[in-house]
Image (tube, rainbow, N blue to C red):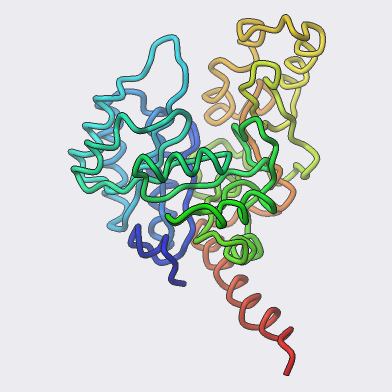
Length: 325
């Protein structure tokens, strides 16, 4: 399948693996790239330039296909060494960076000079247009259904994607609620050039997370996510669990007096406990509503082959068959 996204990134299928904390390691990124998509290493999971360099090198040993690095800009008590991390990305020869969070303008000149393509994750059309103006090569348009941070506008992809298509000139992919061939065809129909999958890729054999996490996604329905930190204007969609229930009770009790410090036990240091140790009840971890469409734990290759077969069947048989003779 040929789209502006496959052409831009030199990949076979218009499917990108989102950067996910303690999930986007070399094992998953290389598997996605080997299966024809674009795998992504999560930069901040590595934390230091030295560890990121090692992870990129590990990924290179597992694939000779293109892969990228995610760099997320979020407020932190001790900010990451962004200059060092970007220096490593460039020196390692990585040619794709996925940015998220705050405006990536500060880093674009050095990335552009090194020939790195930048795709920025946006939750609103106005943000996507800003990314286009500052020189991003593509954007990932993140609908309200997504796991992680959906922004504060609450616009789902059935509206957000066509609106992005009306306004943008650069290529964009859909993100949030993406799981299968139906997702891909629908995204293309609404003007996107491909799709970004996060939660769906966690439930694969190669995802380097505890089996409890993968089973939790299979067991969950589309009704099992919750929105937290809305009062802090840092809304996050997470899988409901005991820790999230405690957090939501605090939000209800404290109301407008809620401070981030009040929910630290349910959000700080949770990802290693969940993803590595398998304590899926520990606290808040990102999960999209797409969990309702996850029913198995295939290999990445099986998942990608299935998506592309299903997409081609929908286009060539179901939709073509609806044409009047």
